[in-house]
Image (tube, rainbow, N blue to C red; front, side):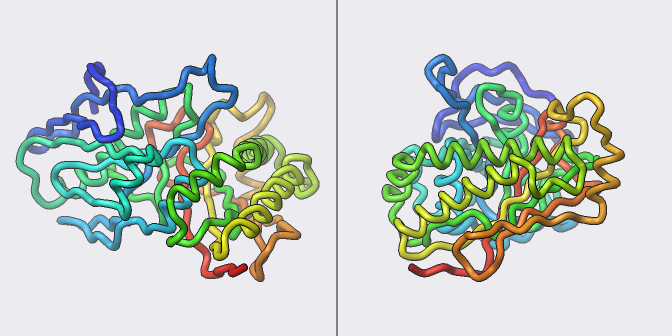
Length: 328
């Protein structure tokens, strides 16, 4: 797939123009997404390119199971600095409270403009492909930590955007508190601003945990500084969320870590990591509100991953809500 040189900025509702001939791969141009001046930003921002819904591809089409929920949108806008949810002109999937979210700059909804006639699997590829096309360019941007993100149990991407490789999956199970769907968006944004320090510390502790997993395949992982730091950070967020919001639900966050990425230090062996984590490894997180014990779950396996992120440490994210709802 070829992308032309950018000609303009992609803002919250700008169009991304693409063309596709019969039987040809998607091609077109994608502009640079607005990012902060790093001289002015003390902390690298974290961004996700999210899908607007859960889509199941079929041989000659697709099933649209549902759009992402109000609660899932609150998960995105609480935990990520930038949330980009691409759309397209063939089948536009709206998200709840879209106008308010765009107006408050909580999300961006660039729209891919396809040209030509689309049938059967071509429609499916185009719908799934708009997220992949935007993500392909943004994950190359080193001023923001961009990662492709979907909700559900597995990634749904066009075949020309995936490759199979050995990965380490780290699942933070039943860990991230998310406010109820009826909490006003401005309330979420205010909490996010007021608790920016705690949220930055949580993300930093998660990144340190990922680094430790990639470089320390040993039975002492549960007592490592990175695990203890993450446990402290999630306890702080859990406590402040419970104090601020009447009702929350815990979310799982899973990441596919790249065994060939830049965070593998000299001497670390992909084979050793696969051997150690191949059977699965779990660490409970204590002193967190809720009946279900949060866990760090780690395993190694061959996975279909997002090919354009192959040089990055984090290949993709998947999140889903747990069944436990916590009421204050």
